[in-house]
Image (cartoon, rainbow, N blue to C red; front, side, top):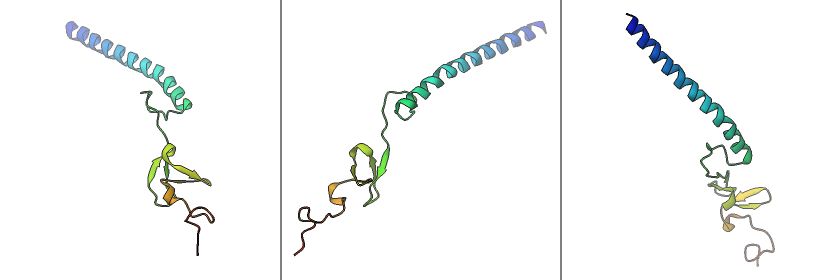
Length: 96
């Protein structure tokens, strides 16, 4: 009976030790994740990949990365042909 209790105490001690190590590891990773979110990489776990916010084209509604979009008067467009026609610019505004 004493052997069973000793074995149970050892197993529980190992289990407790592993849980302490896991919680300590999580505590050290959390500040690193907060720093990475504050630096602007989107909080993707610190895997080194920078994420970019997605925007929606005001003309067709397709979503694309902000860096690939054309910003015009506070709206985003996926291509130049989706920009609104401006009078006096090229053939788009010419009327005969």
